[in-house]
Length: 351
Image (cartoon, rainbow, N blue to C red; front, side, top):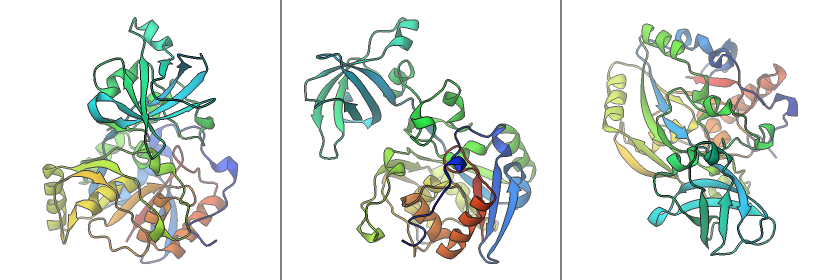
């Protein structure tokens, strides 16, 4: 099967730990027009970009969405993943247990952290199973999910990192330094490389930034089940591009600067909000599926991590780069032992 659906990756290149410091990750720079590839370091980004460019960052914040507990009726082990708010305070969740779960069951969430904080025990009542296979569950506590989850939840690391087993340091490290709006169950990984010092360097260079929001969902990791992208049903994720962000983008264009999307999630928001030759304020459910060929109306430069085979993320990058050049870039990254996926290195795609 041709690239970009599949490629072979040695298991040792899947990053299990983040780079320290963040901005010392490697940076593979792809020049589309020249068809060339350079090898740099992430903290060199300010000198690679141009004064007047505008970075567009995804300011979503990862919530500690993974839960462990037991079934109230049998005491059997249960594992769940909070996905999003449902109706009337119910949570939409993935649930896993031995045997069949049933509506009306009570789940008692592991409350070791709650005991330490002298907080009440979190219980979830399973209400109904949705056609997607997800469950609606009613918590016995009132309040925003991100507040409730802080006391009992775990960092929802993807399964290729330590088989999903989180550590205390992942709470800070699997989060961008500019995260602000809680709601994601996966990090916008291209943003993980930024540091306050790097932002200072960008500012001195005359490079600005603005924020959009896209709450990254579980669908970001799901491989495509078809060889024909036109037959793939794209997942939905809530997003927003504010009036101030739209204004910053238009000002950048007026001064001849380039729009630099930080991550595929920012690309999806920008291209969803692009109306003709303008980017306008927008809020809603994003389900734009970008794959070759696609005419980009908003994004000039893309910064992204390396993605898993057969994913919509990889197809988006292929649409931006060109399939042949992207294949060359991935082969070069593997040959040079770049680190892949969420905690891995980055790639910058220039015109």
